[in-house]
Structure formats: structure tokens, C-alpha cells
Image (cartoon, rainbow, N blue to C red; front, side, top):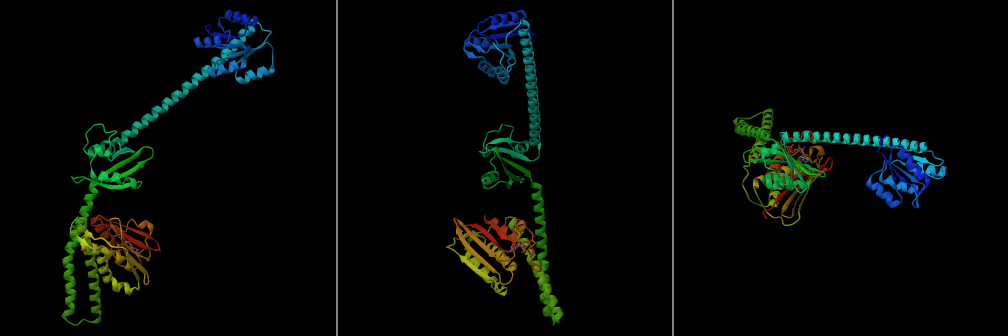
Length: 482
Ligand code: ADP
């Protein structure tokens, strides 16, 4: 027991007040008396007591309500209620309120001191327990904070050092973070970049285009090219509550590999063309050297068919090579409806042969485009040729040209087999033939790759809308001269 413990007595003047004062003094406690409510407040302000004894009635107030106020301010303060008479009701209320002790006459000095000592000891235990709990909780919080700080540092170190470039921006595209790889990719020095607009710091046109396209949808793949030949694949990923992240991987070596492959195909195709022409020429000459029997004529015909097929494939490959290399620079004024007419005239026999129902729709005056007429014809031929090829006999084909703002929309629709959804994203790739191709339908898988290259080189867009069994619709958007 600390002899310095201050006991506050909030009791109306009466012999019991003096008795308590004396008894507690004698037991070594410091005692303070409050004569009214303001005295009580003052005492508490000067020094928080170790214990308070409050009368059932004090300064015209109810001792229980005084205790309630005190416990609200000092929840661990031990309080003993003194009453003139023992009342079970009062004791119950005191207990409910959380008071520590209950005294009533007849009282001996020892009773008072014992009750005070017991209440103080309980109060102290409660205080100790509380302090211990607070310490335990705060140390566990500090530990957690330390762990999350360590985790954060670990994560930052990983992002800072990975090979891929990482930029994190807020919703206004101001930089929150860039890693070391980004500084190297864009040749940025060590200056602080946080808070700057990304486009003010990095002026790469492809990156700007990626950011501009970022409003269109969630995840974007985009190539970022540099004058020195480096190519990066960039992805834009929105991050909820933060903004977005742009990650960049170096794909220069893949691009180089692709170029070497294309060069190889181009060279081989080129070298194959002359011998093929000569083989075809000789097969034609054989017929002139003398009469052939029926079998020989049939074999020569098959031979010629195969040579023509290989020649078409070689020509397609050469075309693709030229288109991909950017050699398609010829531009003239082209009227798409005229091109379409010639193409349909060429396919007329095939359309009639399969008894296909052809519908043409030219909705309004179609503007001209600046394009390479040969390539545009090739693009239209490939789309209409596919529609005829894949639509079964007695099917229907619909071709339409319309205008939307400054763009021409060419639509080639059929009610053929349709293309399985999971394959639709692949059909514009080189050599890809989908699983819907009916047996015996010939093709190289290059037609749509050529269509895409031609449309791309004319700054247009092409895509397919199709569902299995319901037909396909190929749509091409081309910017007009205006
Ligand atoms: P192919 O030489 O095989 O016709 P394409 O590049 O022209 O090559 O087309 C790629 C694939 O797309 C085709 O093999 C076929 O699976 C699918 N396809 C193209 N056009 C149509 C169409 N009109 N209807 C159904 N499938 C089509």
C-alpha cells in the first residue's frame, strides 16, 4: 500500500466524516474533503484521487449519480458508497454501476480501513491489467506496422528492380511511381518525378496513344516503338482507388525474330515463283508436243491445278511480305462501290454456280478514299471470295457500303457456318484456318491476314461478328478523303 494514496471524501458534514478522516489518516493515507459539487470538481482537477468515498446523499445530489459522472471521467477510479442504512436495493444499484465497496453503520475504524484497502487493491489490479492490455495491444500493433513496413519495402524493392518497366499514375495521370527500368527505357535521369503529368515527362507518341486509348476499356496491349529500333509491349491496367499502372516488356528480340522469319518466307517465295512459272509453261507445252491419251490429259490438268494453287500461295506470301514491309505506298482516288461492282462481276459465275442469293446495298452517296486500287480490290475479293467459299449451296450473301461520319463501312455478310467465338480472334493471323472449315474446302489461311494488312496500311479497321451456325459478318472501316 502506498502511503501517498489520496482518498477523497464526498460526504456531508457528520460525525462519520470525521471518523473516516481520522481513521484513514491514522492508516497513513492522504485525505481530502469536498464540501460541495464545485469543491469535488476542484479536488479532482488538482489531483486525481486513488479512491473516493461518496455519501448516498452529498451536497443535495444523489451519490449514485455523482459516482456515475466520476466513472465516466475516470473509469478505473475505485468508489465506495456510504449510506446511513443498509439497503439491498441500494447495494444492487451500486453494484450495477460498478462501484467497488459499500459501507454502512455501525462502523469501526478497522472496517473503514479494510474496505478502503480492499477496494484500492482491486482498483490497482484492474489498473495493472488495463496497462498490461494496452501495452500488449500497442506492441502487437507496432509489430504489425513493422511487418507491413517490411513487406512494403520488399515489394518496392521487387518492383524497383524487375526487368519490366512499371509506371503507376493517379486518376489524373500524374506519376505516383516509376521504377528503374522505366528510367533506363526512356533515358530519364534521377530527378524526382512524383506528381508530374506522365505526358509532360515522357513524350513518346506511342505511349501517349496508349494513354489516350485507356478510356476505351480495361486492359490494353500496345506496341511502343523507339527510333533506335527497340520495341516494347505495353499494358495499361486500371487500379481501383489508385489510378492505373503501365507495364512495359522489351519485345525487340521477338520483333527481330519475326522480321527474320518474314524475310525468309519472302525470299523463299520469291525464289519459288520463277521455277513455278516455268513448270506451268512446260505442262502447257507438253500438250502441244503431240496427242496425249485420256489419263495423261487428266494428270496434266491435275498438275496444272496444283501448280496454280502453289503459285497463288506464293503470290499471297509475297503480297503479305510487301504489305508488312510497308511497300504499299501507292495512293489514288478510289471509289469503293466501283471496286465492289467489278469484284462481284468476277464472282458472278461462282455465285450462280452455288445458287447463292446475293443482296447489294448502297445506302447513300459514298465518298471516295485515297487508296491503292489493286490492294482494295484484293481486300474486297478476299472477303467476298470467302463468303462464297464458306456458304453452302442455296445460301445468301449480303454486301453493303454505307457512310458513318467520315468513314466508309463495308459489310460482307453470309449465312454460312459461322466462326466459333474462341477462334474469331485468330482468323486474321497468318496460316490460321478455323475448325469450321468444311472438309475439302481449300485455302491457305492467308486471305484474311492480307485483308488485315491492307486495311491497316489504309488506317482502317476490320473485324468479324459471327456466331456458329448463324453466319458471319466481316466489317471494314476505311477513312474517306475528307
Ligand atoms: P482460308 O484460306 O482458309 O479461307 P482466310 O485467312 O481467308 O483463310 O480465313 C481464315 C479462316 O477464317 C478460314 O479458314 C475460316 O475458318 C474462317 N473464315 C473466313 N471467312 C469465313 C466465312 N465467311 N465464313 C466462315 N468462316 C470463315
